[in-house]
Length: 519
Image (cartoon, rainbow, N blue to C red):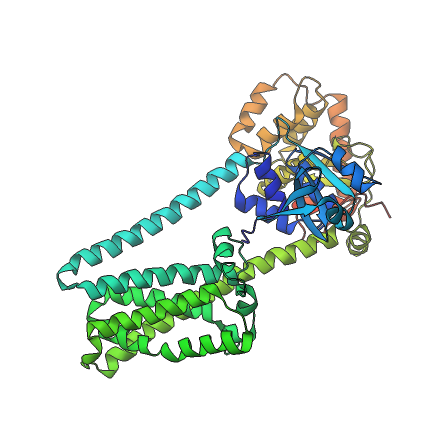
């Protein structure tokens, strides 16, 4: 997941809204309208953050009347205006803080401001459950890292009698190499890191991004030097810690980095005419390793054989290729988020949705064949859920539907119940609960679908309800008659304005669909 600080999570941080980074970042990066103020407004509303947009005519005067902070666009970039003084405007774009004179800022400002305010109920949806999952994942990661350090510590302790100052220096230098290599991998993956950005801006004529994105940054147009370096330092550490008897092989392999050091310096100085600070740090570390090995006298030893050399070489190849595949997988995940965002953009387009739905089976619907309605009764978008009270998949759909209803007030949800033979009373009970004014229908439905062990309790709790009343019987008969006429065979079946949603759509996709008219 891309951990870049974006406009949405920046607002959450400013307002001190409880949120989980991974969940909120994914929500932002997959939102169909993330490149517009409308999209930002929709995201804030999803988190129950009160917001509203205003347009100003006289930008140079009206800007002083707008309460800060607020979100706007300046030169096609989202930014948060933090402070407006008599002469300057202070604003942030991502993790960068900028300051501009009023007149210059107003020339680039679009004149629209999105105001936002925290409410008592403002929070990430399902925050506690998401936080619990994140804590479990974090605990697993910490446990893995702890086990790794224990193994390393025990290995060092076991071999302590064979260690000397050369091993210690090599350990420290390669540890630094791993840290720099990880920062380069972050840059490659376009993960915004304040610490990395500060390093890359140390010198005036330095541009890490330009060099890391150039063709020269890849070997055979596939393996990046960042991946090779990171894998190389990890393999070095593995040999130093776990295979100290192969230390001289490690030392001789380090000599192979000399041509790369010279080539990299030449390329940055002569061809690129710019410097990558992190790359220079890497070159210094590689050079330090060679100097340390020279001072140790390890190159005076030539007790090597072909089999052991091939074995050590395989360790390095395995480390480098493993890092390459891992980085590629992470990069693909980031691309997946981009693809999801593009798909959501299509789903949010009314014309596109209409074309797609026209190719799907159509069911005759109206508001008369089922009175079980939730949401906006006047909505032009009617989502019909054909469900079975004892269907496991229907329970999952129910959870998603009511989650959708929380965040989309402009839709209508219509339930149609169908039952297995001999279990008709379950449908009748759910129908009766809807018509009973003394019952919280949503709570009762949640208890039924999401807590299967509470179904008998519901029967007992509402045993006084007459399942054979005229109202319940008529409603049940309407559901049964309609499902038989429409030849509904599978539950859950989800319709939007009578059209069956495509098999590769989910209820969550319906969040972005609005005002899809009956055709």
